[in-house]
Length: 156
Image (cartoon, rainbow, N blue to C red; front, side, top):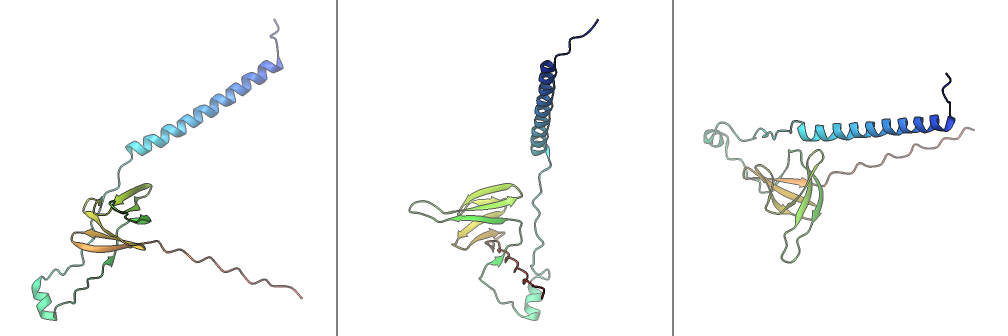
């Protein structure tokens, strides 16, 4: 008994097999991505160690009172400023920030960015965050300078 060997039928079967394998691979990658996104452990917010004096009022009177600085200190939290939208008549301004990797938020002035962190003020070049009664400044990320090209040397 001889089986019929048709080239067009064999090519069609090979093409269907390749497309099926590609579709299953794409489905597996999408399922793995969404499984990781939904069930991955969330990053925890950690409070930074405070720079307050542990000795209380005795240390302040022993060594003199420290001068209070009303300027906002730079923030030490992992929040990156991505954009600022100015306030318009009747509407609050807001800032676009990356709180965690791949978590981008648009926060209105006066609202909470994260638990215990409030967006206090929006300026054209920075925003001021308030955490535990202390103001911290979040500025635009510094752009790295492009490397200078190496001088061209000619052989003589």
